[in-house]
Length: 437
Image (cartoon, rainbow, N blue to C red; front, side):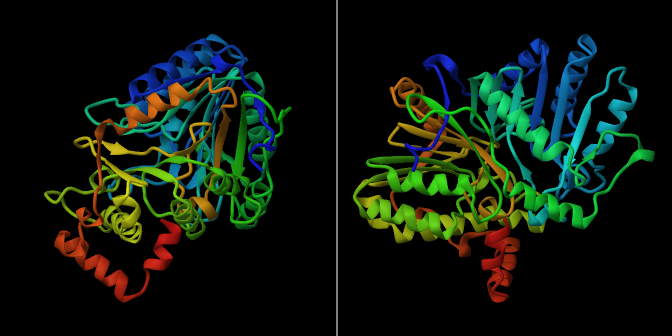
């Protein structure tokens, strides 16, 4: 299925790798400054902080230099209209958008996209910074931590693909399937023009998105990239590709995910891969590298239990596959680098096919959020050395597990965490929570 999957032909030098948040920020700002025709940005959010304002001011400067520059910024509608989880008194990011555009001589649209009627039911998790004929693809959103604006960073993956056809098809999907829908609203418009979508419009929009796909002129031979889109469990090309990547791998998988909570179908595929005698490297963030982790010395809130729930999911998987850990087939690498956090996603199969994606490879991504990804087919082996170098960079701050017992049990957790997790178990709510978190 993967070999027959059409893709956009790429030259060997069309792909480049950015390894740090600083490189990503520099490349993004440089591309914005030199843009000549269009800038389309899709991210979960653009935060009201120093980094978020710097990017928005860079976009405004580009628009002022060239008023006919086509700029569209897409963010999740619900996320933009609330403050940070666990922080009181924050206003939504949309207030910044509104104020900036009201003062601008050449404003542009910042568009709120509601994938579902409530944020917990699904969000816009579409990724991509499409600038002229290039795509910077990353799972990162725009804020201080993702761009390493201060002393803390959130580690992600960053790839630049030079392809006019890829850029065009990603822009066209946004134009044709998102921007003009009745459920979508411009968050940067004046207060008197504020528009809140109707529930029925959002439902219709979700149904349309679940059938959307990228349209491009493709080939089934040579080095190529396949843009993938997915929403919901049925007919989800992105999910299907993940499973086929695992099933078709002949020797080795390299998997990155920040939150280890794979859907049942993916867990089974990984277990089958191991039973067939093949290898897997999984890089996952330590619980302290989770963006919801709250250090014991700080005031605890309920959201702080999430990293511990993910850790227990990892412990359960490692315990079942301890035999593969012992014989060297399964390597689980825990990433931890001081106060920084881990946000990498993707799968490489035999260092020949590489999926770069914003999907967390968990039940929420599998069924609730609008996700996308780019599958790179390296038929000539031109990118193999670069992907191996990226993998080595990813592993720099990791510790390999040799036994599942190295992962903490519930008894070692702080008292507030134990209290919440015992309550969840008592109510038998863990099954539901794993599906939406």
